[in-house]
Image (tube, rainbow, N blue to C red; front, side, top):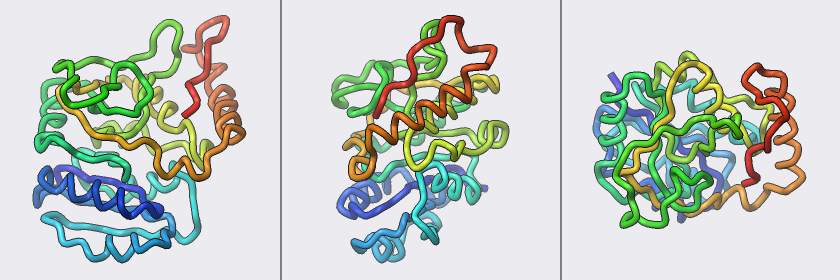
Length: 250
């Protein structure tokens, strides 16, 4: 029985990856697993990952060809064995030792939850956005689709996803690669599948903010994936009459 499957994507920036790994160690148990999907790093990241000796099993998958975020996460999703899946970006740093335990407890108290996510800085969405650990609101808030937003404002950084939800909703939609809006699409699918998305505002994670994507993401790329998102959902019965704005650019 595996408790939490941690998935981290890497592409260079070894200094951030080391900080991410070292900070989550106090949260891990022997019942967890750590899955890395490396996008052909060239800065020693692969050697570092292969050298890790953690309390839980560690797996390193190096892609055959460079790929987008959705495809890389799907590689990890197909390998997970845990009751929960933690999407842990390599530009994040755990600052509270009870991070995973507390979010798991939220699931236990909310049986219809599909995703639980923490607060962090450098994140889109007012519910999750928090400048520091001292600014936590200390409550649990549902993230949903409002009357003027037909998508939940919930980037995937720090998601703790219930295995039952993954099994029902499926994988990320890879049409939004190489980078973009697959997490907004997935969050919408989670809600339409009958699950709730909750923000655990007792927990704060330091987020350094799209460190890797800044190197290759362009406005043109974001415009393309936004248009794909619109085409996918515009004919859906939940799309409000008169239209509404697309999710914001990253």
